[in-house]
Image 1 (cartoon, rainbow, N blue to C red):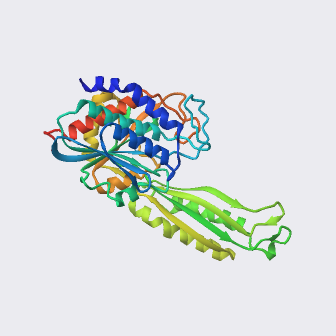
Image 2: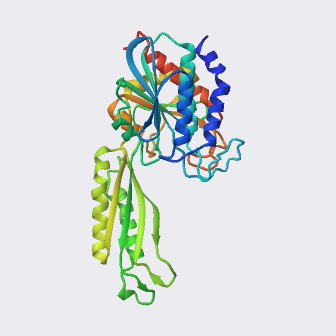
Image 3: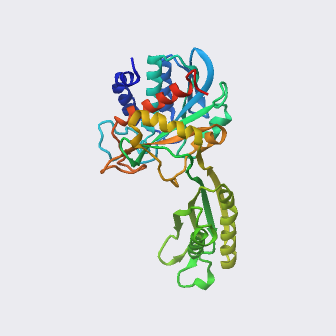
Length: 390
């Protein structure tokens, strides 16, 4: 049986897995049903399975007949706190949760690769780890899983991940060596002034006004402090202050995120934001409390693995459909694996004229694309773990 026929035999089951997972979305660190579902599927295949890693993480290990290297395929368990509006017959049955970032598809592709490789039982050397990670959407499950040893026993030599990507045409695959996704952090700033009557501002310290000045100053970091050849972003996503039209706000709260591809800039963000908050608040007579939360580092693909990935993808969709995408300011905790193990994070194009963006309540994709992902994974495993692999 050749690879394509083996995948076609499993097509209905792969799609059904995606639909069953889509019905039971669970946000970060609540992925109980999801982790039990994938563990049961791995065990049904006869694959050694470890559960409860970093709370809900699952790892299955397929050991081939001969010793060799280990390749890890990583996917995400968690969903988003989004109310689904797709109208699909297999829509979310969990209120206020949805697989709006394609993680249901990612899990189906990894399980699909596991099924096909079990069916084919190719004469390979080494092992495959199938890793199902919680909390990618935040606060991040990759670092805790690494801390609990998922890159060991056996040692992982290469790590691979696929992400559905509506920014690329359906049927294409995006592969980029080097930085592909940005480092991202979060910060929360609480400003405390002195509230009072709207007619008596001279007796108050207006926290709302202080907040607006802080926001204006933060927006000038990129335009006036950063090298314009090193892309960076500061976004304020939340700003809350005030309780009534005639009351000067005594407190204000703002939350935001930073993005960059430059590691030096990434490490400089806390001090830059602290300096602005301190300067503005001091000059206007307010107090502040900054909670800066480091997020994910830059996602950097290994150049050698990325080049081999172009071969796997080209063998699946044709060389003309393998593209080099622009880097994105989106963040991914897959970056933590790539800091320790050479690997590649690929974008699987699912864009159509009517496609909704990731994280949208109407996000969906053509399920046939899952077979493309399964085939790429299988090509990768059979290449990297063949007896001729270096």
